[in-house]
Structures are given as structure tokens and as C-alpha cells.
Image (cartoon, rainbow, N blue to C red; front, side, top):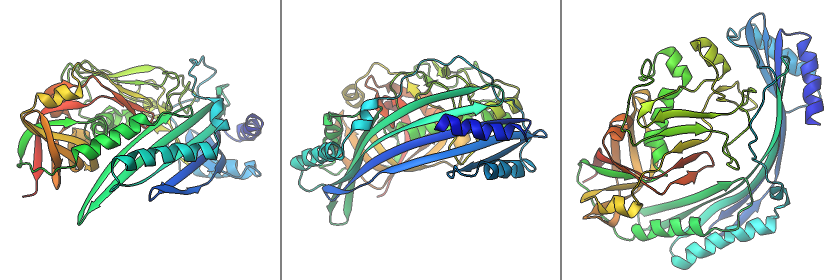
Length: 439
């Protein structure tokens, strides 16, 4: 149905536009929610929608709908927006050879609610058996969908993807003190082993049993994988975004090929990895996926471009166009990989006389994210004293700059993990990060 509907819409669009593209999505999702240590709700959602992007008189028009019974209205809306749309600096790509990137497991469609409930309850019961003071909530979800793209230059793709995810949070309330611990995992296949999630939550609970205090000063900080996206990856991606480069706001303009951080740090975008939830054969514009080094042994290598941004910058798309049904494509990373180092987490901690482990951050305020600055409250953090975790710290902030932190490395961990199906990173230990603690 999707292909036929997309072809019908495209056929109508080609009659009134210079170029046109149809992006069509069908998906189903089944989340099971847990609250207060037991299952609360289970439901199912189905989504079907189409988006039309066209070029008319040199300008881009766009419209999307979830109503498939009136393609003429969809095209007319796109034509209306083209009158005021941006100047098109690209042409839709023609036919391409795409890599084989399996991201669909049909067994997800056979997942039962009973099985999902049992899996989630297994997490709840295991955490509660460790501590009956903790209240557990979270979700188990299964999803599948098909993405279809056709354009008037002959570009086309169609692929299916599946997803299965677990995420659980534990809350411990002691008077006015509230402790939050969390872990989760994503896959393209149904999961049966929750031991890793349980072990992580229990570790956090154990490290938080005692309270500890820190002085306000600069000190070594170990950013756990769950904290790396906010303070390290976010600022780097902002600077490596092709739009920032084109606008001249990125501090890395003119610096590709230069060393910007410690040579032990490498960051790669690779959507061709098989069986990873965020992988894909093509970006959302029909440009084939490929491996793209962003920072290689400390050296800045590439900016991330979609078609329009690449056209503005006089560059080529890097296969990084990403969109939702309701939005135009924009440059975005897909599957990010931070190279592992050679130190275990225990070794990272053992080598620090006094410092901080940051597990989770509450937001990450960026006064100047393009410049790499971060300023974030520590939602969950632990004091290191003489190479040992001595307890949880509260009312603590970390402030710094991603480039300086990565240029002043102690070590990069050897034990990476996947976060959200699109980032693989180990812990990163930095030598001098400003820590502010409430007296």
C-alpha cells in the first residue's frame, strides 16, 4: 500500500512542480508502562503519514499529512509554502546503490503483551529484592515500521526497521532527600536478558548508600557513558553541524585537519553498522549511508551535511539528512561511536585521589554550546576519595568546556556501552573540571 500511495502522490506532484519527493512512513508501537512497582497500562499505536517536499520556481515547498484520502490537498499545501520557501540549493538524488544494513527483526512483531509485562516485572522484582525502599517505574516497548522515499529524479528506497526498548527508574525517598537511579537498553530484537540493566541500577543504589561532600574547586571528573552526551558529544556535534559551518558560527570553521583535542579521542558517525536501532541504508533524502570520521585521533575531519546545507556550503551531502514527517530534513548524526581507551572503570577511579564520578546530569545548560561550554547540575554523582567511591554527592554542578576537557584527559575507559540505540561510548576521565558544591 505504501509504495502505491507514494507513487500516486508523486505522480500528481510531478505535474505541478519542477522536482518533487514523497517521504512515506508506516509504523506501529506497543508500550507497556510500569508505575509504583507494577504494570499500569499497555496500549498500541499505529501511524501512517506522508510528506511532500517539492521545488517550484527555484524554491522549496513542504507539507505533510496523516490523512491519505486527499493527496491533492497535500500537494496544494506544499505549493503554497513554496511561494515563501527557501531557495533550493540542491537537486533530489537519482537512483543509488545502498549498503545492506539489516535493522529489522520480524520476531518483534510476534512479541506478546504478556511477555513484555513479564520482562518488565522481572526488572522491578530484581531491583526490589535488592532494596525494598526503592519504587520502580519504567516501560517496555516494541515497534516496527517501514520507510519509503520516491522522487522525480528516480531516487527511491524502501526499508523496514524494528525496535525493542526497556527503560526503568528507581526512586528512593528519605525525608526531603530524593534519589533517582536509571538504566535502559535498546535493540532491534526482542530482549530476554535484563541482568545488565538490573546490575547497573543496583550499582547506583549501592554507591549512593552513603552521603559525601565535595569542596568547590577544579578536580578530576569521571563522566560515565550516561553523562558523556551532554558535556562532550552535544557541544562537538553543534560545532560539526554543516549549518554551523556554513553560517560561520562553528569554532571549527577552517580547522578541518587540525588537532582540536587529545589524540586519544576519536568520534565516528556510522549508520552502516548492522542491527543497531539508529542504523539505516540511506539517510532520509535518499543519500546512501556511509562511515564518516568526525574526530580522528584528536583531529577534526568532517562536518555533517544534508542536501540543502551542503548546497549552501558548496559541499556534498554526507548522507546525514534526518527528518520527521512534520519537518524538513536537517543535518544530524545517526550512529555515533567514541573509541574505547585502555582503562577499566575501576582503574579510572583507583587512579584518582579526590574527584567526582558523574552518572547523570539534570539538563546541561550551555552558555555557548558552539564554543563547547557546559554548565550542568549533577543529578546523580559520587565522590572519589583515595581511589574509592565514598558516597553520593548532592547540590553539585560541573562547569567547563568540552574542548579543554578533552585536551586534558586522564584516560578513556575500555568498557563502552550503547545508549539509546545511537551512541556507543565508554566513560571519559578529565583532569581538571570546575566543580561547585553547595556548602
